[in-house]
Length: 282
Image 1 (spheres, rainbow, N blue to C red):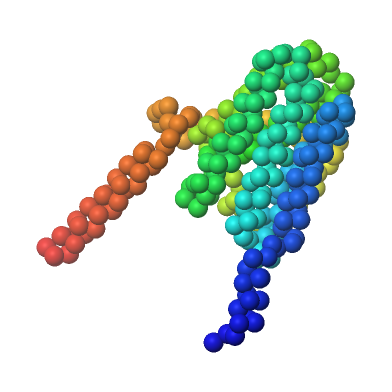
Image 2 (cartoon, helix red, strand yellow):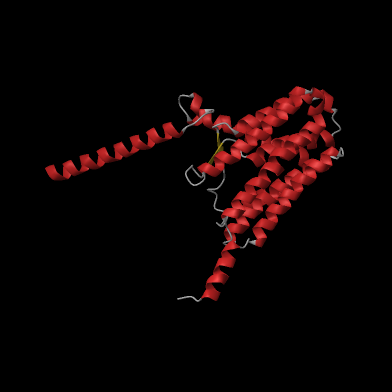
């Protein structure tokens, strides 16, 4: 049996916090906070770039935690808290300071819809984690929604677009991104891609070409990519569902999923019973 010293060391280790993944999460949180401060000082291009940098850190912290076997409940909760700042508050405030401020009540309501949609999206993802289909996201992921809003600000700032000329479109884009996050549209998560598998030489060339294209006009290319990804959700849903219902767009789908699972179990049971009857008759 372990002595008291070993038990105390084990308890202290279990109470500790893993450094590397949480350090990456903190870096993403810092990037989101910097984006807010930069937008308050009219540095909108830097603010938009900071949000995309936060996306890089957000993509790294979870993968590093899994690769180094340093996953923890604290890390998951901390990551969610950082996400609501970096991808909820930061894009909404950057957009508000750039184009929505002159719209009055409509402007701050559009920004709030985006923040609320992001918070609800994270809460739903955390509660459904481990039960949903890993191949798809239910609703637009909050980093992708943030990329659309920040990408639009980045494009407008880089090409010196007058924010007053696109303020209403900016409000529509912000509201739409917020609503897509709480929708039931299915988005490919790309979690089923085997990143450790072998690929052809042409695939490597395509990846290099993709980096070159992004490097030529990063603001326009990144905004276009995430915009197309955002509209892919409704397209995927409408193509895969024969009869569109309200629950396919928004609302609770637990009842429908439960009925489908029950029906599938009944069909399996009936097939097994028929097989047993056939063997008995033979």
